[in-house]
Image (cartoon, rainbow, N blue to C red; front, side):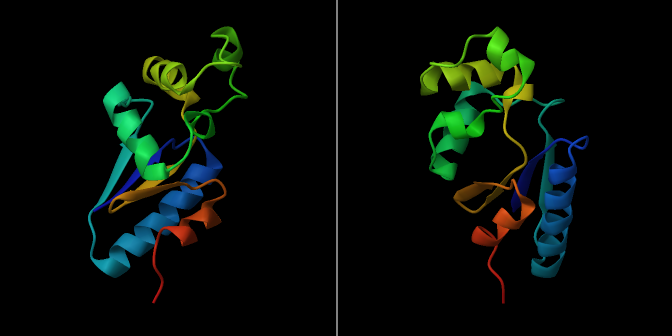
Amino acid sequence: MLTIYHNPRCSKSRAALAIAEQFAAAEGLILRVVEYLKTPLTLEQLTALQKQLGVDARAMVRDTETEFAELGLDKADDAALLAAVARCPILLQRPIVVYGDRAVIARPPEALAALLPTR
């Protein structure tokens, strides 16, 4: 299974979705598209996703969103950042693609090459 945490209003997310759709079709995989603004991730899901990404929580957060400043997250630790994203999903960096036990922030969409094997 291939999963993309997607925001259809984002051009980078739409481009990554097109790549993911092509890969899933070529490999015979089910593609699960999660519009995370409609279906927010829980704190537990975000923690698991962070482990799959292998990054600190700050890399998962859109620090240019108004909510980032409003919540005073400049000096927040990983736990506080993930809790903020669970409460305010607009803060989640996008898109994120999960394949197997690994994940990548596909911004730019070409970053998917590190995750999706080519033949």
